[in-house]
Length: 222
Image (cartoon, rainbow, N blue to C red; front, side):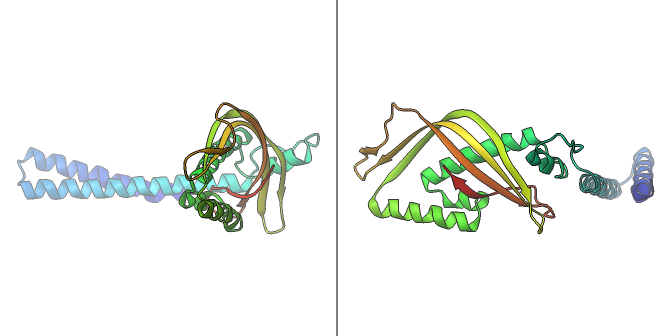
């Protein structure tokens, strides 16, 4: 309760300001007096909202760092035990976000959009991607990828190292149409009518002590 005392005090001040504003309105205040009272009330109200949001965020952070997202069951697999020990971790939500990241990364790589890739992929991996993109550009080759959908996406491995770095490996099975075209726009690899069933194994990484909830792609395998 003590942590909210300053908010309560600010709230009482706002009530006073609004009360003062009401009395001014009843006595036909000047335009400058009315405007000044409104501005004071608005500023203090904004302070309260900001302080309230700050306290709420601190409270949520304290809860998430003090307790795991779910109890650890001895009958769990080693992977599930690791996942259960990650504060605030939601397996289903993670997989949904991983699929979105997969789609965005595949699309950005196909288009050669390195700006987007740099926000989602580690520096080591982006260097490898860049090598492929540079070679395609030198050869006058363009790529087209159409991600039809996912057959499945499952977490196959999870670990936390001594530096509190979390690595989660996800196996994606997706349906895609992949084409490579030459300078003339002719298809030199792939078939527009052929849907490939492709398996990718990607590893995402995040620091357990980081304030950012974002995960970075650090490894890809077929």
